[in-house]
Length: 281
Ligand code: AMP
Image 1 (tube, protein in one colour):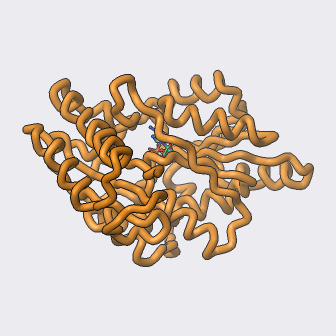
Image 2 (cartoon, rainbow, N blue to C red; image 1 turned 180 degrees about the vertical axis):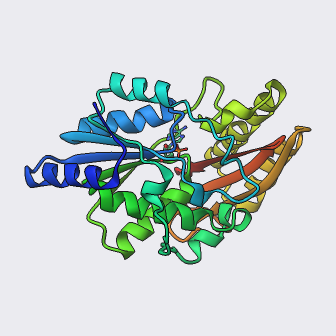
């Protein structure tokens, strides 16, 4: 595995692969790798001739009151994990490599970035879209791999890729969960024992929604009301949003017909958690 810290070196390396018609599967991450990341890496390996993983805790997607400073950075362990998975290139740029002095350009995916998580995290998706656009230009992947767990992010990045004509296929893979259903996240490390227990109610509320839908319920209001009841039964749980939305426009849907997404964000203590489920009918 080659570890590359320079933008120009990474770009040169990927251009050379492209000239030799070696396909590149790309997995952008912020590190603290867990099984969720590994499922993306394994798919990238399976579907491409070479695999590149990036680890960059992107300051542009954190608000001033968010956890940029304390975000976990176990880089030695991450390197070992990537090596074990036989990743070909680990791109691990320094902040100044990605945001050189005088940096002024950003990518804004309108409307979609202001809804749901975006309504609470001003500038977050501008930061995400900008860094992913930069990474696409640096790595020039054939396929890029993202987790369903960050549903709104996948919607926004699909939009950006289509709007800006990036020649990249976006692959979205299912959320990997811990044994009792909690969606894996690098931020789960922040949870106390009690918060972790309460956090299980996110996935439990989604399972209840799935059961209601299976039993014939089609009214979004009835489903979200029941989910809210489940979540609010926990002392430490604060629901930020809970909605059933169109999977392309993110507009709320009143009556479900299949294919919509149930999306939710809640705080367990101080830790913000998200989860979602695509509705299958
Ligand atoms: P992050 O390091 O949190 O920026 O995540 C990097 C990529 O891994 C994103 O595409 C995430 O959606 C994806 N990811 C994070 N957690 C999971 C999970 N539990 N299951 C599947 N993908 C995930």
